[in-house]
Image (cartoon, rainbow, N blue to C red; front, side):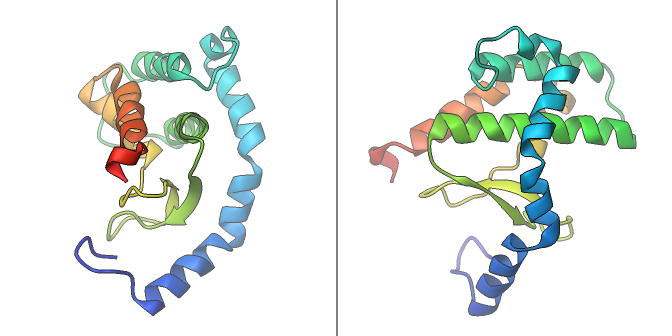
Length: 161
């Protein structure tokens, strides 16, 4: 989909097929286990009454910044798995805070693999939680997840729709 044109019928069919893919369905089904594993890997989340809040986002950021003090160009498989779990928690938090939206299986950028992203009604772009956690790590910007959520909440108000 281009920013300057609507989806074609072929693109819409391909997108619908991606949402039914076994890979995506399995990924969606793993959410409870992935969130539980994230809480194990980020014990500070377990200290919260509700880890899926802005405070939880801050704890995910703090843990990721500590885990990647000097991020390199190429992450190991274990580091990629950790980032994926962080992204799962970020996305879960955003969905709960927004009260609308869903996970989708899409190719956000040409040349990138298909993967999980968030789609919110009235917001014309996909939100990529893995990109969000990478931004935190590589740009060393704590509180950027809270700012991104605040922007999403602002876009979700009637004035922006």
